[in-house]
Length: 216
Image 1 (cartoon, rainbow, N blue to C red):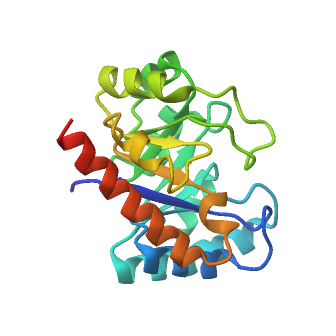
Image 2: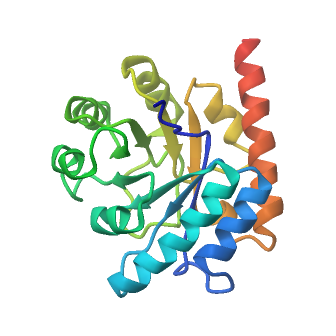
């Protein structure tokens, strides 16, 4: 079974904004062209998280969209999500693989080429690399990596690279021209007046970057 990593990952968030629920954000993002939804919630009752992710799973199943859970391996297993995304200080990738099995997706975070190589060695299916640009979505964000290091990582690592951090419809084409598989965003969708419209603009920007890269 081929794992669907996707090109446009939208992380749902109810801390940076409170107008929309995880489910509402996911619904609008999917309508706008997102092919991967990542549930991101750092605090709260586990039972409620499981129920929310189950609802997201039903939405994603109906649209052939991949559903990833950030950090919480237990929630991903209980809600039968398609996989998890794990930061450098989160649950170890090899242990997550033992629990999730070979068919589930595991993403790892990297801010350096060495981090990316570690994710590859530990068995990740894709790497979330960044922050490429300055970001306000994470209080503890690492130093900006920049486009050059992103390109070096894409060329050195034989896994899909999903760029994250400060990505917008304006700079997404530049990101995609590095050869990155796709982008992941939080505030560029969640904190916008119209999340569906914002997602559509990002989807279009990705296609622009791919076509520019093809003609480079």
